[in-house]
Image (cartoon, rainbow, N blue to C red; front, side):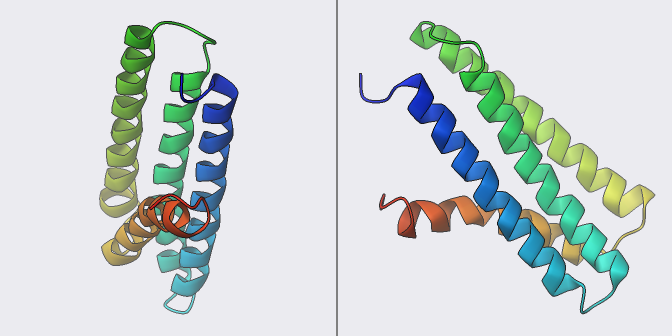
Length: 125
């Protein structure tokens, strides 16, 4: 066994924290454009961050089980994440009429934060 369940939970917490920080930074940067742009970036990044939290809770929330059950939880969590992301994307752009570019920038900053963190802070890469 290469990793334990607590190590996976810790990695999920770190990921969500780093994505939340990246979301806040993107939102602050978009505040220069306007309040709606800042809200859009916040909503976009928050959807990715909350989706990652859902995936982490779904994957590591049930304790120690077999590999098939963990894989099923991971798939279910990933599906829940992307359903959430698409719903927020629709709400932010079509319903609340926030500018699309800041919404997508918030999503991109949260999604890319994991890659940057894995490369530089976690020493993997």
